[in-house]
Image (cartoon, rainbow, N blue to C red; front, side, top):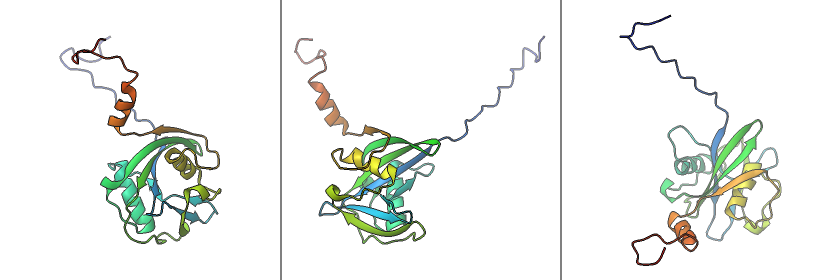
Length: 184
């Protein structure tokens, strides 16, 4: 049985969009000239990095610069945020993807701008970080400096490197391919 005439194409079925099932954010590793890392004490007693959700249309770098300014009043150009890793862990009931953003030239003084979330901001030496850490912050810090003594967090870490460095590191194990006069 024909439900439409051959001259008229059938209407395409409406595309079903999946329900949102994940969180995307950025954790900002802010390092001062003395090498210390900025952490905020949340009301639940855990320490956390500045950061938060990525808004639609934002890059990780843009979200990191915006969140840093919103949460701490520190300023940094999004071009100066370096993404050092992407971390995948589980928020309660859903996957969470967090970029680890690193900045070393934030301007201003850290202040509590969201007192409903953060009690105070403090600078900590990387080798003496508090053990009560928000799990995504611990995962981001471990992605940045794998040797740090941090509480365990179930997370997958995907380091982000400079493509030139990655290619140079791989060059020694890749076969030589024509054009340079060397044997294949």
